Amino acid sequence: MKGSEHNFRQDTASGLEALLTLNMVEGLGVTLLSRLLERFGSPEAVLAASRNALEEVEGVGSEVSRNISKATKKNDASAEMKAAEALGVKIISAASEDYPQPLRRIFDPPLVLYVKGELKEEDALAMAIVGSRRASYYGKNQAERLAGSLAKMGFTIVSGMAWGIDSAAHKGALGAGGRTIAVLGSGLANPYPKGNEKLLAEIIENGAAISEFPLTFPPRAENFPRRNRLISGLCLGVVVVEAAERSGSLITARWAMEQGREVFAVPGPIDSATSRGTHRLIKDGAKLVERVEDVIEELGPLAEVLTPVPDEQKRQTGRLKPEEEKILQALSPNEPRSIEEIIAETGFSAQGVSSVLMVLELKKLVKQLTGKRFVRA
Image 1: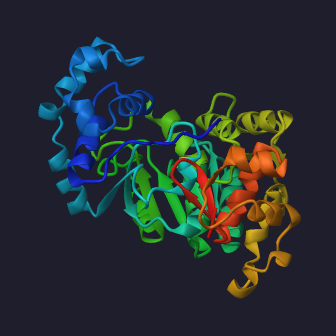
Image 2: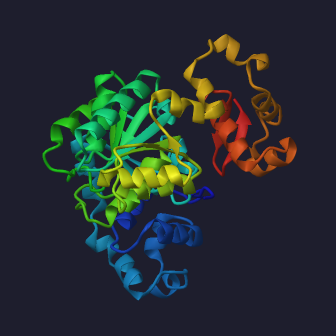
């Protein structure tokens, strides 16, 4: 799926407050809100627009336009911001420099993120591990083992903090002294599942919990497929450990495929219902994973960042692979270039250019600007 850029104006406290007001509007998802911001230019302008003008935007019907027109009175964004501050939650808009770079590359990145804990640049090297809530001992053991091994190699482990495989993945990362990020399908002031608060506190202490939903938003069933696109979007790939034939983990894997991420699956006993989903993924082309090396091998050029080179050597192009050197030579410090321009000059595929650019970003040799344009750092 092609990435999406949010080119709206939101550089003031009032702009963030207006954006939060819209983010709380019932029935207004990311796609519609993005169209509205593209049409009107800023969150404040969307709120000030007439219902007739709102309904001229594709997909905005009478119910959504009515909810937007009532939003300022109904949704207290100022109170939301004060509550977030009291809880130690940072609110980041897609227009902020603090917004996670990997999410800028997905089709429908959230316009607002609530973050408790700390997101770091190193989290760009992330792997998701997801799977069944009704996990077996085998499944939980494999998830914890893989998460720990990946964390020791510098990966941030991303999951959804559900019972079963998700919790085991977070615990594996924490046990290895690594970083981990939980993406919630509810508001951060209303975490789900209940009873997992101790794990959540450890995750926040050693990474972050994030959500695109307002603070007290409930954990509705329809939230979780939407949540899953962020789990995959934050990562280089997704490892599925145990999944039934109809599983939210398979939705995460599908998002990963559409976002151009790698998909991995851990095989299980052939007579287990929670092996059917992972075995289906393997039949459909997912990489079979038995050990952490299986993941690293599949990452190709991205695996190079796992063996850091001293800063003074990073800028010696002789230390780079030929494709990295060629793309670096296609860039300058002063003239931003789009992916399309880099493809035209180098002759590489779109997927190849995106992959190498990510490597160069992680090596701090390339910087991404707004509009998916790149310069040499």
